[in-house]
Image (cartoon, rainbow, N blue to C red; front, side):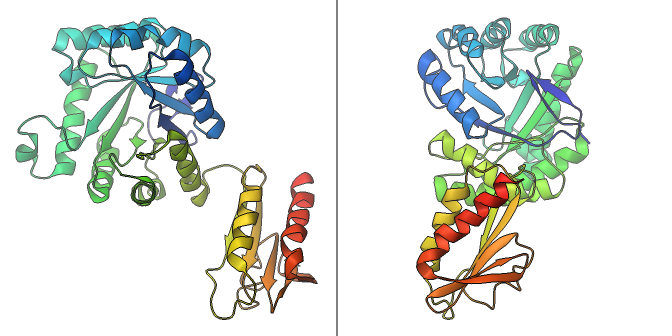
Length: 348
């Protein structure tokens, strides 16, 4: 179990539920736009939101942004330690900075001292594509080099009596990312922020992230996650929720299971499944709904569903917990099933 770290009003590590994180993609200095995006991400399911702080104007906006945010905030800073100090002074909840690339140990000491006094944790973010020169040759493979890089940065902070640390070790390769995190989990006591960096556009990025993040979470590794997509950050939050839900880590929701269809299917199952799935997407109640194309896949194979339908020839049977309740016409399937779902979720 990793060390428990407090980030504003939330906690990570130490057995806490896995938290969803995303990142804004509008200028941080544009206060109104970034606040709107942060709160939209929170509404979409983000527990923590990060934003870039590339300059003083962005750092000066932190106080105003923080005062109107509904979730803890992380300042992402590279090279300039003074920006980290400015963000800490203005109430940021967490800083992402690599102590080895901010201009010497005196600068790292200043950040560590300010963060410790304010109770602000620091995330050390190691990326496989930007390691220190000569480290890969020394370590022999990329995952080990990434862990060695993290170790060097940790030692700098520890030297200045700072230990509220979170680590990330991301690469664009799923295999490299998974191997690096597995090694890190054996090496460090700190919470791990998971993600496959530069994962790509929506479809490719979701697949790579689901494989990488999902594999690690099944190993019991990971305290926060970000699905990195070249897309609207709201899609990142949506995808992260789906990953956690698929692993029974995402809280209560209506799970829709549906079969892939085959020649036995005599109803137009695909749009039926899509409409049911869309209709229940915002319901935070634990319920399993089955949308099956024929009696082979339901109700027997879906007997564990709370409610479901199994298609016939232009009709379907409605079943609950594997027991057939009645036969319905194809046009009745969606309204009938939604009515049953409403009754069940209203009573739970």
